[in-house]
Image 1 (cartoon, rainbow, N blue to C red):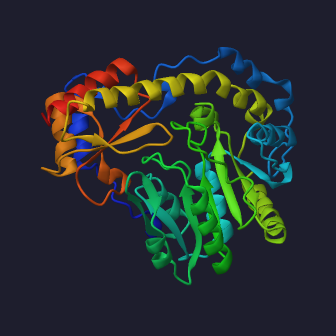
Image 2: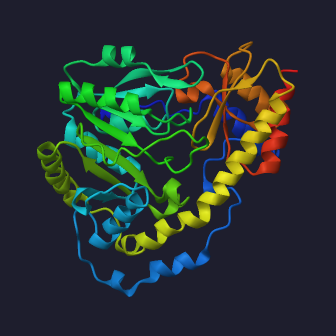
Length: 385
């Protein structure tokens, strides 16, 4: 009865079962995987809610790529970075997830392929399945920091490959795509008529002074740059995302025209959110300093506690909200994280959730409230004394 594309394994895994058992027993757990900023103790400017009560929302005036005023708010966001983006190259979506589905539909026939980095966020497999797209991995390698393994990327390309996804900075490694890597990606995609899909939801959270830039003005290859207020303004519930289409003029113009038809078919983004776009983006000025301060404080706490732990180290991180710990691989990551839940009352992500190929990696969220983070980290590291 059901489509093959939805034949996922839906039974809970051992990690989820162990976690639910502890919660059912009423046990208080320290959650070091917090990813929802609205539940992380930050202070929002409540006055922004007034922007959702605009009386103009009572009139429906469908615009396939989004209201011009909302797209101009996105233009202004990039202008603050020193980049010029034309409003007619912006398509508003309800989320970056929807933007991915639009791009996959634009570029791929059923069975076509998209290259995706490993480690990376686990959502991509579901997004690809729903669009009948196959994912092929390329590696991020760690050597005093993360780099794209272009040998594995080139090896992954087949006649069916239509695009390369880069997450900038990556989740969970926190690594930005370097300028020389962007040049190599452009050359590869240009020569093979492939596109770049650049996910920049964490772009605004650098942790080092190393230079980085948005893909939104990348003109050397057809590029779709995805972002939204979910991370930029810590407002995942407001459902405002977008893509910016750039590249050589002729192909970018054709892509924008075809994308407008896809967007017109769905007309998914609601009017109140579009009218509030400028205000919602302005909320980043309230939220980003709070988030960045906590991320830096928790990262400093990691370094402080690791100073006395020779067997555990953190991997270099350049941006985003997460940190990866390298721990002794004396057991599987699944068994380790389950025992941390059951014995220490601490929740952390096992590395395989993010497609780390080996055991010995734990992923922690740096937006966890500081007191919880410090205590939880102490309990985790106690396992390796």
